[in-house]
Image (cartoon, rainbow, N blue to C red):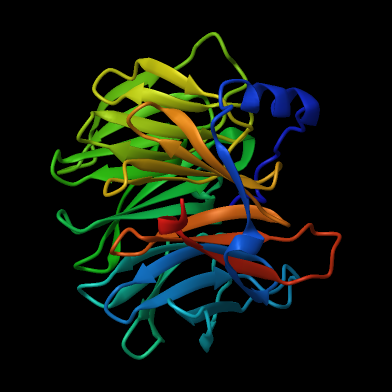
Length: 351
């Protein structure tokens, strides 16, 4: 979920000049080159289900206090046709899919909980309450949910008041909260299954490394101490090269960091970012720039911009098809406009 965060306005001209200075060979595309499907208000994260060849899109139709229900769109992955609208008791934002066990985890940001949805029946299995509203130190909104299938854990970041954050660890086998960890201030996660590591980024410009076996903190590094305005939102892993790509919602540039040390290796010129996704099959990194209404395609070998895709509204979250040939993006409208958020289907073979 991104609307929770206060995103600073950057000078559009300065961003544009910085972004294009080293990317003269990059080719521009627009969303008109691809397929779109309007959905509804407040659409957030996406999950691709290869078995069903479907795409799930989480949404929170209303923020009114008396309208707390959520809605999940089930789309045909090829045509983007809306096959089903799945009602949920709570508003949905973040998603994580356990395809093997037919469970879609839905982060209920405002209620501080996670709902489990059976993808065979599209019915709710249960809701796990994480935030404890009776205890100020354990009260937080759900931001991100990331699944570690190997260790049967779901990592959930909780954004609290006064920059306090919680890390909730859910036991996916028992389907219950296993542990609440304080003082890490987590925002985004990425799991290195083979390496038994979980990498966490936070609003203080830090990269944290957790032991995937027990969630113990192994390392905590300030990636770029000279820049106090960093607010890291998401991280994608290229474990073959031992690097991570960090999206920052406050400052410009995608940061390339060495995972085992937290050392900043390179800045890839770009506007401030929201989502970041690595495609190993194509050696590409995709980044959404919500404020600038564009998506970057980055060459993961040279860490340089390959293409820019301009969108009519604000690109938010990303999902990749199992064959790595199609990228999906949720695109949000300006809150002032009474228009439906939509999903963009990007054929990567056109690049």
